Length: 187
Length: 280
Image (cartoon, rainbow over all chains, first blue to last red; front, side):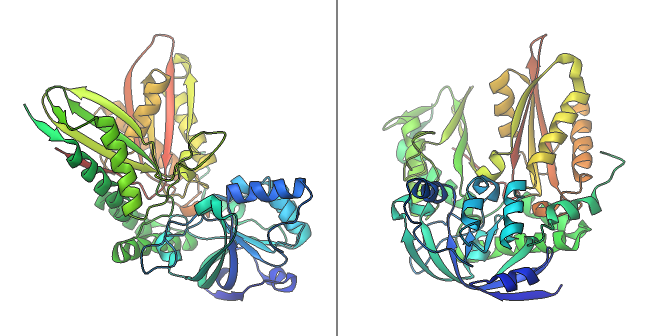
């Protein structure tokens, strides 16, 4: 299977080249955020306050890592279910967010917003926390430290394995692949 | 009459929490190997290979398989002639969880109130189910439960007229909706009968049954086989990205129920189906 190497930040031109089904290896800086961090960012926007950072062309990884063991920089760090962030995501896409890494399908509203903002959604293998931890080379908390595992972290990754599951045109692997293997006789 | 010191319980529970999160049981690994060998989707095959590879990395680095080290569920079988010395059993079990999550560098994922949502910072409280049994034994089973899959679980109070067909339909629908988010291939625990909470507890306990082991009742074993085949024909596949391995096992437990009811609970767990048991 062909593998596409991509580097962050990921501009619109590069994002448009990616297709659902592409296997990628991501290198560069990405940012972690999950439920509580998203909720707090939305509260900031409601109050007219700025976000903790500029997300233009950046990628958010939905993860809440384990604590780092002595000698390590981070603990196991696999993806969490992206759907829980669906209600918040379009706000960030409208502010330039270029892509997300997580697991599971997204809502129609998120997919529409991805198409109008040329954003990409990647999935990595859920539960593969130890393997993905291995790809993380540096970690720095940049906001909401009090949220612990849910704080926003800036992380450097090297050859982080993922699959493009929804591309900028709205092609969705969750819809297309299942049909190939469903046995109609049964269902 | 046997006596157990609470320190022994605390230390064992702590070890079990770390063990469960770091090493997957042989039955689950064998199930995933079989899935990898039979998977028809190229993406699916590759994903299953990554999952198996991850178990090796976790074991070698001695770190958790998955960052969601779960909320701890315990099934405690307590002999009525047993004496616990040095403090309360409940407090010892909770202290063991706190110790294990701290010393094992496991993620603390429990919040103190479902609305205020402040992290308790030691992964307690655990949810503990006790059974009192004859004798002086003590058996503790630990299931750290991840919530990606827990969130896809469901319960329904069916009518007796819905029967076997109604149960099949509800299980299949729950798997179809949930498995793409639940880190498939999943294991499905089903509790049928009893009352609302009895069905839910049976569904949870069914997840701890070794993979490949069937319910001894003939008609329930047939139901398990049927559901496994039906689920794997949905096409959802590993991580929901298409394939022929969506479910590794369907474990059904039943209990007598009321003339007016047919409760059915479906508890879903991801392929990192963690369960560790010790007897004292």
